[in-house]
Image (cartoon, rainbow, N blue to C red):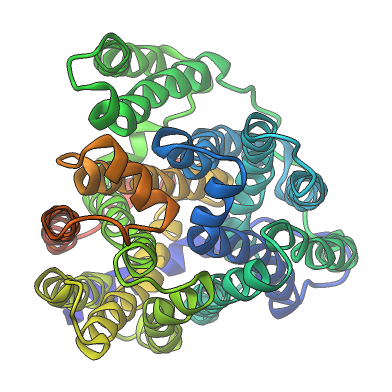
Length: 502
């Protein structure tokens, strides 16, 4: 552990020579963090609130299980792909303007989405909102890494995770209260003042940050192929249980992913300015850290969604109380994040991240065993708390390990890739976990689960639903175990990766 920590410190020292130069007065990193925190709050409160009010929105638009699923996935799919594309934009055109553009776009669409006349307009606006969210997420961590000196970077990233956790904590509560008192539209309108303040404050604080990027080109073909391949995979996973795994649409989706993935690798190896920088993956700690990012996101994100749906559909709670009772996930992250930020400069990422994943695995075991209609809340709450605490302990050292492994000119790509993998984990987690829950259910029961009402179902149907949730938690547990393996496999970081010039 000591050798690994010393090696990471040496790697951090090497990064100082790659930090971008600034013109004008020195930038206060804590002021930059205040700007990025507003962006995190804007996005995370929106996403957290939607998880709880999904049944309300589904009922409002008379959406069945398939459409209700895409209320979540439409944002995640577009956001996941554009994050990586915008990572190239960030390195090429500069982070400041793109970050502020994202804040503005997300804010305007949040206002418009509350006026959606039908579910199709709603889904289109959610996709546009996802583009704004991608600009925010892509540049958020990169701005922090640029602004903070290496000695305090762990604290900066830890506070960033802390703010994200607090926003996730507030999101379900805000969503539940607002939806029950004022209507689901206000879940989106709530973020408009935050976005306006964030844009104005960002213009003031970020004006002295470097705004000019490398000027390199954009890999459009790589972005298009990535979008189509991931779209095929996600559509197939989300629609397989309802359309049938042998249906034409599902088979075409899987086929597109299988065929286009090697094509993408072939294109990227020959592109002048590739979207995927394969040279970064020569560093094993960097590769394993990204793999662990994906697996942690896959295992963590669906816990709130599954718990919220279960409490509304099976335990007959309204949106407000469902939002209250999923608080332990984000409360655990809220407690762990400052600890992780403080410890990340003293304990190796390998040890701290693996420990966090182990705690999350313990929480998932509790949830898998305790989820049933007559369950007491205390063990379920503790299980969710363990999942959140473990994830909070994992995120800061793992993110720090990724962002300090690359030169400053590739931080946009590195953060874009990290965020894309995290989002892809969220997308696949949502699609797969909901598929597992509903796979063995009749269509009428699937719709009841999404609508949050199963009061008229038989004991046999209730048993099927509960069993589906337990299998979903088991899948999340397997992903966490694989994440622990990836985290443990980090070796000594090779220095060659940090010497690549732009």
